[in-house]
Length: 244
Ligand SMILES: [Zn+2]
Image 1 (cartoon, rainbow, N blue to C red):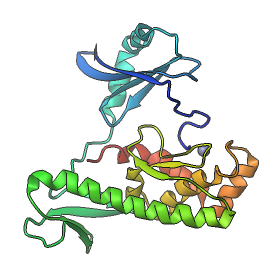
Image 2: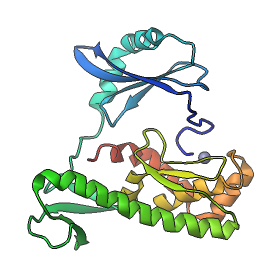
Image 3: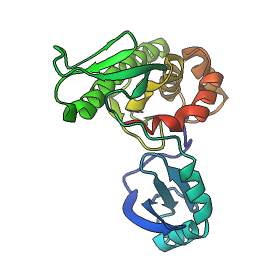
Image 4: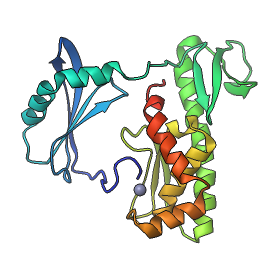
């Protein structure tokens, strides 16, 4: 997995949703009791304009909320600094494989969704546009990612299980010990070489579950420029969480 190495989401993660007042503002908070958390972690949640509090299994949720209140100013500052939200709507600019595309509502279009000349056209009623566009992006992601997983696994001579797609909150991809993959559909918005790196990273986990030297050698064999791709993710990754 990519953003939070060494952490696997087990079945024992318990989640609660609450809101707290910080600096005169109502902030949604996701409280997660994680079996492998060693300490309390506060993280900004760019999808919900909120906060994620991760706690060790036995720690009381109040401890996390107390820390959040103490750091209220800092948290609100971080939330204010998030990139603007871009809703899926007519006229919106949405990246597709790294290239900006303008979304156009074409009520009478013959196809549900099609991409042409820097535009993504969506037919049907405007109330269905967000869902139709999202479904289409997911399908494109499934195709792009699926082809690359198959090709890279073949190069390693490794079998793999399922390739699932999710709106994962903190990770772009993951690979289970059984060789099942899960990827975030938002990868389809990234430049192709970055998407390629994310896939290469997870496929390389078929050989090594750690992030040791051997693992990175394998990644290097499976994709062109992982250093640049990682820098891109670091700089722009959070922005992609703001679409739709
Ligand atoms: Zn990894």
